Image 1 (tube, rainbow, N blue to C red):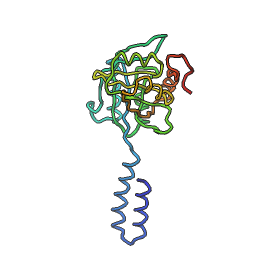
Image 2: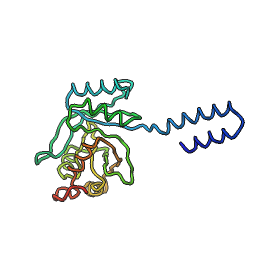
Image 3: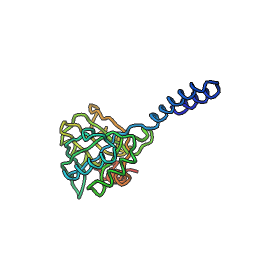
Image 4: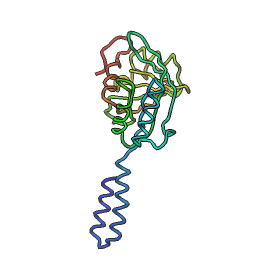
Length: 217
């Protein structure tokens, strides 16, 4: 996008048509802006109604969303390993689209009630990203608990509709697929996020699963 826009403007400069030049470069400048501002789907979770309201107010105040309805709200169950066993917590997942992930990261970090919140966005390199989100369209609470207990995922979030979203590392993707079997369909997407949460994902994901192997490297 950038190279094409610049090339058109340069060609226009070489021709004696000032009015055409201005029009072309204005159009291409708009193209440059749209190319550089790729929308990112951002997600966080909380377990408290007042915290949820505070997060929504902060997003509106920062103009990251125009209306409260622009924030997708889902009731979920979060499964993760803590204190030697699988935890099952009720949470609310909030998601929205923005062209500025860094701004969203700053706003959510300052308004969140968790010490280490999950703030992730769809993005990163599909070829060398270390951090991944896996989506299973139809799943059960038993499967969510099993994956969390296997330590192949840092967390497994089960939505009311049965969709299961896991956060894990690149090294654990193949073992997860092997554990689920050939009939399971997992949609993998690389993610970006706050460094503290991504560090936690790496720390809590075990490439050897329940066999007690080393953490992902």
